[in-house]
Length: 459
Ligand SMILES: [Zn+2]
Image (cartoon, rainbow, N blue to C red; front, top):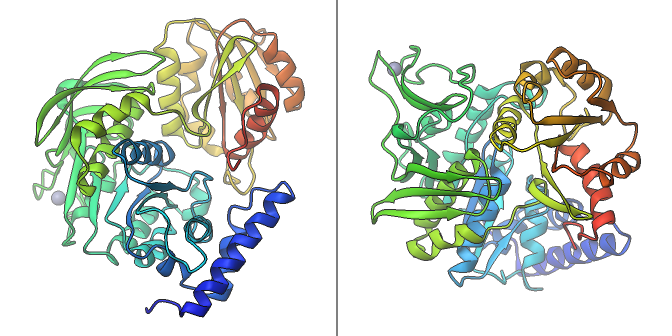
């Protein structure tokens, strides 16, 4: 596919920028529409507006946004200009909008680097246009089943994308058998990241998504577990199994509500690394970001030290100050992510209030049956849980699930709307953890942003 002509590039870029400016003037985010307009004029405009850039594309079920944020921060801390598609519009149209608005009026990119969050199914459309230096696949878990038709289909979608870019380095989670299998049968260079067996079990083990050996179809044997289906797997039939990580977490020295300290091994030896975001899953995200930085050839020391100053992104352990009280928001959209959030909450040993919000709109997936596969018993069994607010379109279903999980009636409260919820939260004295799914997060965040004066994400 050749690049669009100079005239088409100018027209496409101009229409993209103009559309975004108009949408923002009318108070809308303008995340995907400007890209659609640009592609109407020049369908492959992304090819021009990403020309010559060094790009990292991040895909996978959980941790995309945080991994992107960490990789972007590392590149920036190394003194390089870098674009990040922070809006969360991670389909072809949104990525086209961000890269085209990043270009000058002749369609030439204004930054040399970009970190792009990309939807799993959109990868095959995006990568042939931007020819990334690295594709990071964080992990694969059952998610939004009605959208892709299961985790094996999602893996196949990603594989279709990977096959289009044999020159791209794959940054893969060695401990996650589904995404790690993307390295099979392709010529791409790889950087594997993972945890040393000595790190030990850090959450609930659930092998439902582990699948079977992609080579011979036998069930895996396991040498160790970290959480869910992440750990040390090996096929007894053909010998396929976990690869030794290039970026390896040797130990977790400390883990608090503010972050963690780990010992990390790379080809340059072992270092102590501070990560300014809490929770074990963010250690994986940090290791993925380090893998991306290595694929780009960034200096290791600056990359590692950047992890101590990463700020949380939009709804991912984002912290709000409610009249001096702390509210942390954790986006949850599937059992694995939700269970990890519960592991984090229950590890903190402090009394807390939880807010659970569940919607079932297009951005969430209409099927909410995943709440039945989620370990609410773990949350509800925590003696530190003192109050539980339930909100969102499917609040009654969620409340019924929480009752079944053992949350007493006197601590549960269904709340009809977010303004009422905000009023209640402003009266709270305990730390608050809000766990909404996607569209519920957008609503809750809007109310919180207005109350606390935080900016909208596109401002
Ligand atoms: Zn096998």
